Amino acid sequence: MDVTQLEAKVRDYGARNYKPLDVMVTKGEGIWVEDINGKRYMDCLSAYSSLNQGHCHPRILAALVDQAKKLHLTSRAFKNDMLPRFYQKICNLAGLDACLPMNTGTEAVETALKAARKYAHEFMNIDSNGGNIIACKNNFHGRTISIVSFSSEPLYRDGFGPYTPGFKLVPFGDAIAFEEAIDDSTIGILLEPIQGEGGILLPPDGYLARVREFCNERGILMILDEIQTGLGRTGKMFAHDWEEIKPDILILGKALSGGMYPVSAMLARRDIMDVFAPGTHGSTFGGNPLACAVAIAALDVIVEENLPNRALELGKYLMKELGKIQSRVIKEIRGRGLLVGIELVEDARPYCEMLLNRGILCKDTHGTTIRIAPPLIIERDEIDHLVSIMNEILS
Ligand SMILES: Cc1ncc(COP(=O)(O)O)c(C=O)c1O
Picture 1 (cartoon, protein in one colour):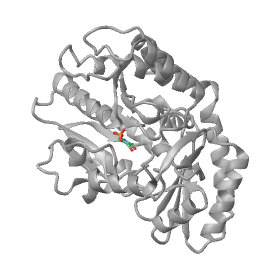
Picture 2: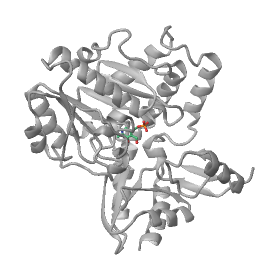
Picture 3: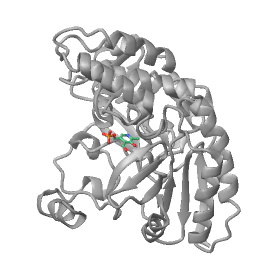
Picture 4: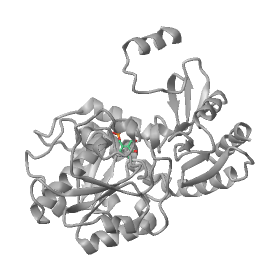
């Protein structure tokens, strides 16, 4: 089938819930991908920060192939020998006691919400049908009915009611507003350390630490969604490491598998995790041996290739070089590590289309922001190449 025929199949058979840029990718290696006509592009989206380790990392690929030949799925009806190895690796890395593996990020968020509610009903004197979880305006945590119930984005939420009750919204980055919203029904707060889909929005310094303090004072749970910011992206292993705090519940996904396979996880203190007794929660695929083997290799690559530190150094360099671009359309450049947003004074989509024509894959987010999030294995001269094209397009 040629490109036109493939496009026709998408039009005829596909759901219309995406509007991808006009490139059909067929191959990927490291930070580069190739389209169906053999043209090369630098991937500066990394599947929304899933490909921190790059496309087709040989070590992760080998782990996938080796494990696929041995054992790929048992379901949790039986034990498998890879899951304990994954547990140990991820819990040690995150500094949390226990892990519950799932598949997609959204499922791990749902798992965290269930854990928080059950913990509140068992230990926080909150009525078994009550309790509120505070979330932030402009959040993105996934697409299920419950999660879109507390979205403030009409596009994600409208038309999907009736909505799940039990959530309250406060402005992101405003610790006082959070403190004022806490009452006897509050179970905890769910938030992203940096709002990714919201437009790469950083809270003021000290915000996470302040939220942590309020949660301690009021005996409520701090739940961090690090699906996009975790595992090296912001220049530390986790974005919460910037403020030297630990959440009570941590949610990971995306780069947990290097994008090779859907793997997500909810991590928590032991007393929180123990609200799940046999039968109370589960997943046919969660914790399967293939997922575990891939995740172990993906985590080893992050640690052994020192990816958080690369993101830190190269992120600083990228921000410095982008800052030199003289452009009437740039309003602000913000970010941390290799998660960078260029906020424009106008719609970002046409600029992403121009970048595409010049061999750079970027995605607009929240209308006016160009998100730059390349694999963390990017080299300095590749950043120079990226910046020179950005300069051409934006100035
Ligand atoms: C912060 C955050 N939470 C949750 C999700 C949902 O993850 P998934 O698409 O794997 O379900 C995403 C995806 O972009 C995300 O960025």
